[in-house]
Length: 376
Figure (tube, rainbow, N blue to C red):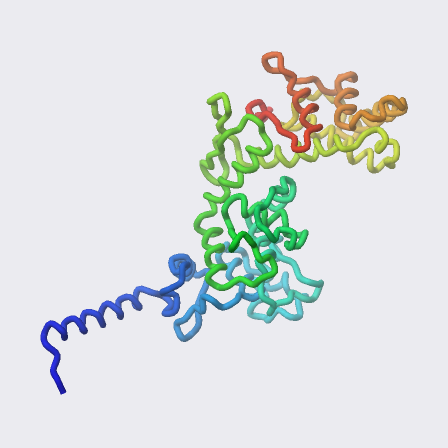
């Protein structure tokens, strides 16, 4: 047998040591060629995901609904609650705490009251919906209903279209060859990528979401910086800026959008409503007038129910004249509110903020002035 020279022997020895070192630095021996190696290892070190007993991760393996529930609940540090999933007959005892955790957080639901469809692969569209819910932003994704560039957008289930489009717009997910493949399964490495973004890059995507919301709702906001989980800095077209609470902006958008939505109703609708419907609408309008989000100073006397009753009476009288039937409910309510001393327009530099609001509700996508919407 021919002996190796000294140089050749050293080369073989060093190569062997390098290979051993490379595997030693990898938590799973089958993820060396995975584009998500960094994310997989970070999640494993955080205890959010695990591999198999033979030291593999199976990055290309598809993920079931049960496996996804475990991965997401551990990554988000949700309180585990087996009891919440007790009615699902197809959820094994070992997985009930994770499914229950997602149920408690409003992130998931069963196929029926007793079936979770546990062993089915998690589809890309259902996974997207769960991520948006985990962010706490599903209502806003649905409210804004952003456009999507996915060629197969119409193939996405209606229950998930707004959620997928929202995640697409903030760069949280992407497709392949212009398609999203909504009903397709997700691999373990793909799920790891998304869960990594949720766990370790939450602030980045939250800031993108807040920018998307603000710039589509306020006409004078050009940028939003997320200072911390509770506060943001808004920058305006005029070069000024101010600090807001995240909760204030989100509540302003939700409350004002609901208020604006009543502009889709006019006198022809009002006269067909029963007393309960009128009470619900007028009650919300009155409370909105007295909130930090409205464009009015509020002078209502008595509790909200009493003031709402007064508004209902005045609207009934207003709409009893057929010529007023084309006036929308928001404009009519503001009219009777001002005439009866319940509210008064707040003005700045001669600009009526109430008029800005009243005009904006007739737009397809209402735009509001953020720089004057401060807590009262």
